[in-house]
Length: 113
Image (tube, rainbow, N blue to C red):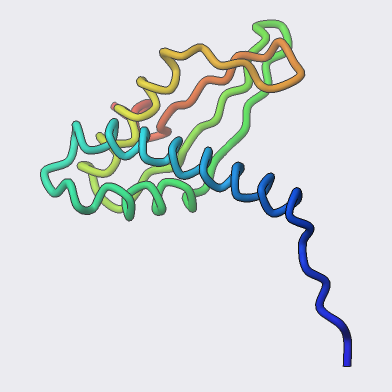
């Protein structure tokens, strides 16, 4: 029978810290998403849908950007939420770690007429 190795206390604290940071980031995103939702209780499930949607990555080295294009969701109201979330995240002008590439988030549906 294989022995199950436990995480050391130090490793467990590190992993717990990562989980806490991720939860707080998601909670901040929930607050942004709720601004465009009528049913506020669905905000976390809306984010789960956004996390699992297909994306396109577009690298532009001359402009020093990495664009993340999210594909359309199930309905126009969800796409409106995505456009709002993208605008809020883009306002932070985040650089991809270890590079000079500015991250740009956009909804493919926002490019449609």
